[in-house]
Length: 153
Ligand SMILES: [Zn+2]
Image 1 (tube, rainbow, N blue to C red):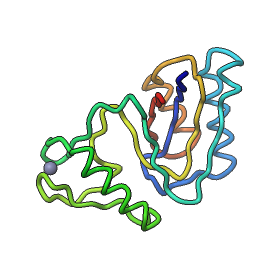
Image 2: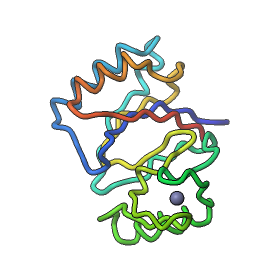
Image 3: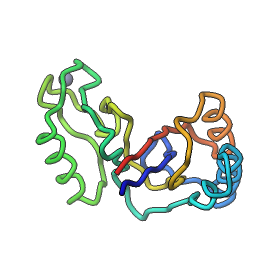
């Protein structure tokens, strides 16, 4: 038994939309789903603090956006749990490969994942990635640039 989600988050992990904007975006996203089954799984989720939006089994590797070196899963897990212990008041870390200061949210995730205080999520979306045009209309409805994540648990 596995679960699939199509999740859309703001590129700024701390940003949250107004209720109106979230409702607007949910309507737009709903229109991109094929059937009522998929629409029933659509939910806007608000978090008090930043949460890791993990893509689950889809994650292949994480790399440094400065030098391209691969980040070891052990280092990454430790960095995330240290920031988590601080309530994710910051996501800044120093990468071991080239000593650059960067946000955990800006590392190169293959597949995409991220950090967020708000997400629009569809359980069992019954479709794949949103097209550039679809993502652009969602961005427009929500009022902030977005990142999409396909979660497979
Ligand atoms: Zn590096």
